[in-house]
Image 1 (cartoon, one colour):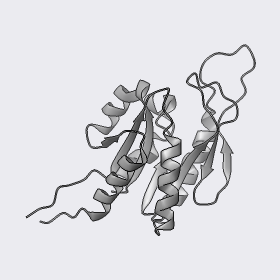
Image 2 (cartoon, helix red, strand yellow):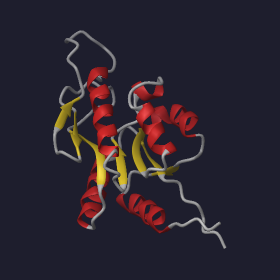
Image 3 (cartoon, one colour):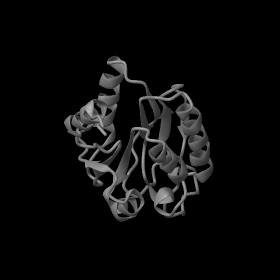
Image 4 (tube, helix red, strand yellow):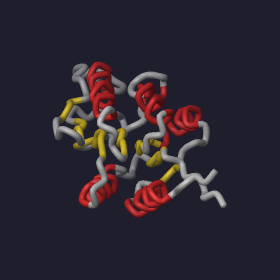
Length: 178
């Protein structure tokens, strides 16, 4: 009898007033303490709903290095300040980390760049195509673009540690019988 197939792609869906990083950080700490090898990025510092925070960084879970991902466009600028060059650098770092075959990959956000077909979309797609387990945080305002990308092949989770742990337990215990 075949076991139920569990998606190895988890999208933590969150609204503007929810923090997906705290429960994810708790999960990562506990999983690593249990021997899970995790690569990718955790977002640090507040990022307001208008994408205007200057002090937003990615912490590389492999090297502990940080990467500033916001650019200062001046006091009069409006709109998202995500630095595409920094995201490109993060994408290269993610590909390097994937070469070490981690148990789980964490991508901090599916954001504006990804919703427009850029950012780390290619790296996310390659990881999924290769069968890697991957968690990504998806703001609800990008849900439609995410759903078009994932095509229902993901597990959508609330921003709660218990939900993340349940998904991970199902991924690590699932088998496919032929």
